[in-house]
Structure formats: structure tokens, C-alpha cells
Amino acid sequence: MKTYDVVVIGAGAAGLMCAAQAGYAGRRVLLLDHAKKAGKKILMSGGGRCNFTNMATTPQHFYSQNPYFCLSALKRYAPGDFVELVERHGVDYVEKAPGQLFCAGSAKAIVRVLLTECEWAGVDVRLGTCVERVERRGEGMRLATSLGHVDAGVAVVATGGLSIPTMGATGFGYDIARQFGLEVLPTRPALVPFTLSEPWKARAAALSGVSVDVRVACNGREFAEPMLFTHRGLSGPAMLQISSVWRPGDTLTVDLLPAEDAQAALRKARCATPKRRLSTWLGERLPKRLAQALLQWYGAAETATPLAEYSNAAVDVWAERLNAWALKPAGTEGWRTAEVTLGGVNTDALSSKDFSVSEIPQLRFIGEVLDVTGELGGFNFQWAWASGVACGRAC
Ligand code: FDA
Image 1 (spheres, helix red, strand yellow):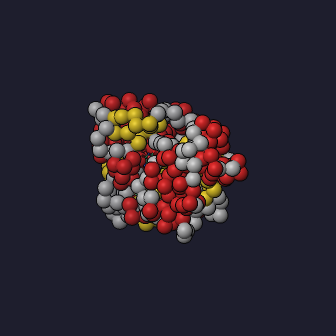
Image 2 (tube, rainbow, N blue to C red):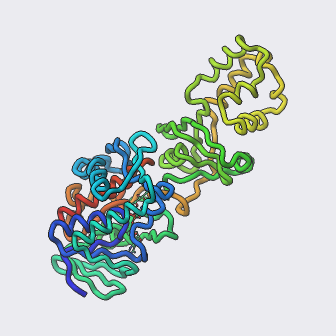
Image 3 (tube, rainbow, N blue to C red):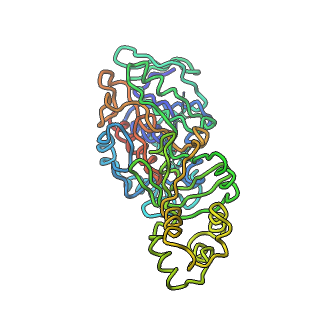
């Protein structure tokens, strides 16, 4: 095999971006991936539309043991820079929610942009290539691959996190980190749906497909987003977001009426419309199926009772169910469906400027393999682009 200035392991979001930037900087670059296709997670992201950035990106939207590490790269490559790139390639996009940009068509457009950039930058892309070993060799690095040995001045590890193993996710990046003495912080699946145990599992299954706007809180964080009932539990943006701070055994507090103080509203309704039924009142505020289910779960007899017959105590009980519904998930769907990995390579041993390892400048880590994890909404791709650019330009 040839000798390269830079070899990038992993042709995902961060690796593609890094390889192109290093190529434009005049480096001879090899980009390797064991998968037969580049950017598989990009292709499946955002429901096939790829939520490729979030215009409101700030370090506050990331989880990391070192919250300052991501600052420099995010500052140097902003969401607007990626928007400029996709516009230059003629990709149409839409803002589906405030700040969240998605492809108007297929996510394939983003992979095409990145592969085109790699081609223009002269990157040698080798897919379906396994990397067996990574070693230090003098001032550079040597890789044992299924194509033979590759020598390079710099090796960039862009192998991503552990989510969706069927898409090619491996812990190889963590193995390399440990091999070179770096700490790997405990990993766990995040942005992942919750599973429930009985009777809530059956109850959620009966409501499968029902979505409701909620505010969910746990461990000092809260998110106001839609929640979705599924066959196995709870999903939707609210649940995916809170899964990043939830720990096994924790209880979620779900506000089913986030725009209303249920106690005050129910007391007011009891005076103003005493003959109305709770079912009617609930049905005006929640999806019909959920309103009916709540009455069924908590006392079918109440369906016919007029609001006038509710005591203050009974109103308070319902208000708590509606504004602070306490629910203890059994667990999460795990790596099989998680969007991202919390934890990973500890950033303390890395330069936030070029992502090199302090004692081994010819070794670098970028993207999700690092202990930097974004919230839902395009932040994870922005991190992949920003870390890829910062590293690639400095290679
Ligand atoms: P990424 O996982 O993209 O790439 C790693 C690459 O390394 C892969 O190509 C893999 O095959 C390769 N690799 C692994 N081990 C290897 C080995 N041993 N040898 C060679 N190659 C190896 N984010 C967001 O911002 N907006 C969104 O809409 C979504 N949506 C979304 C949906 C779903 C279903 C998932 C699973 C994830 C998302 N994400 C997301 C998260 C986002 O996809 C993720 O954060 C980035 O892809 C991370 O980019 P990386 O390049 O770090 O890893």
C-alpha cells in the first residue's frame, strides 16, 4: 500500500468531513471504512431526511464530562458554514422545527455532498476495508488492514459510537483509545425510547401511535416536546431527550397539560360549567384516546360524574395526574435503536484545537467516539462536522 499523510478510520459524518478538509489542505488522505457504504447513519437519520444541523447550536446543547472541550471547534465551524456547503451543492432543505434543518428530499444528498467533497479534495476512499490493528511507527502510525499495511503520518479515529450495531457500529475506537492509554468514560445509549413494565406496557401499547405535547422532567432537566406511545413504551422527542439524563430506577415526571395549571383550570370549570363531565373537559385538551384511557386507568365510574361532584381533594388528585404524572420506565430500547452514545473517549487527553492526543500527536479522535454527545435536533451532526473540520484542517 501507499504511504499517506493522513488515514481516517470511519467514513461516517465526522470522518468524511475530516478527510475532505485534510485533502483540501494538500494532504494525501486515505479514508477507510469496514462498511460497504459511506455515511450509513446519515442515510437513516432524521427519518431518512437527515436533520443535518441546528442553527441554535451552543455548547449548552452537549453532554460531556468536560463541557468546555467542544467550544473551540463549534465556534470555528458554525451551523451556517454547513448550510453554505449544502447550498453550494444545490441541496434543498427545510426548517422543520425552530433551528432544525432537514433535507427537503433524501438524506442521500448529504452523503453525496461529502463524497463529492472527498473526490474534489483527492481523498482515496476505500470502503469494505477492515482495520485490524493500529500501531505507532516512529513519528507516524501503521495500520494493519484487510488491504495490507498502511503507513501514515497521522491516524484519525472517527469510528462513532455503539448505537445500531447492525449499521456497522463497533467499539473499535474505544479499543484504540485504551491501547494508547486513554481513558474511556462509561458508555450508555441515549436519545433512545423507553420500555415499560406491566401494566403500563399494555396500556402504552393500546395507545400506540398517539402523540401528545408534554413537558417531561428528570434529574434537574426538562424538555417540552411531543411524547409518543409505542407498542413497548414511550418515545417521541420528549422521551428521547430525557433518556440522556435518565438513569435506571429514576422516575419521570410528565406534564400532560404543559400549557395549563390543571388544578386552577379544573376548579374554574367546576364553577363555570358544573354539569360538564371530566371526560368532556379532558377530551378538549388531550387526544381523545388518551383522555379515555386516563379515565379508564384511574376510575371508569368517573366518566359520568359531573364536575360539580368533584371535591377539592379529587380535583387535586386529577391535577397531579395531569401536571405531574409520575412514571418509572423499566428500561430503554438500548443500543438497538439509540441514536447516540453518551460517554466515550475522555477529552481531557486531547487538544480541543486539532483533536490530537497530548503525548501522541499523530493520533486523533473526532465525532461521536469522543465523550461529547448532543441533544436531539441536529446537534450531533454539527459536532461531527465541526470536529471533522477542526481536525482535518490541522492534519
Ligand atoms: P458515524 O457512526 O456516523 O460513523 C462511524 C463510521 O465508522 C461508520 O461508517 C462505521 O461503519 C465506521 N466504523 C466503525 N467501526 C469501524 C471499524 N472497526 N473499522 C472501520 N470502520 C469502522 N444526529 C443528528 O444530528 N441529526 C439527526 O437527524 C440524527 N438522526 C439519527 C438517527 C439515527 C437512527 C441514528 C442512529 C443517529 C442519528 N443521529 C442524528 C446521530 C448521528 O448519526 C451521529 O451522531 C453521527 O453519525 C456521528 O458521526 P461519526 O462520524 O462520529 O460516527
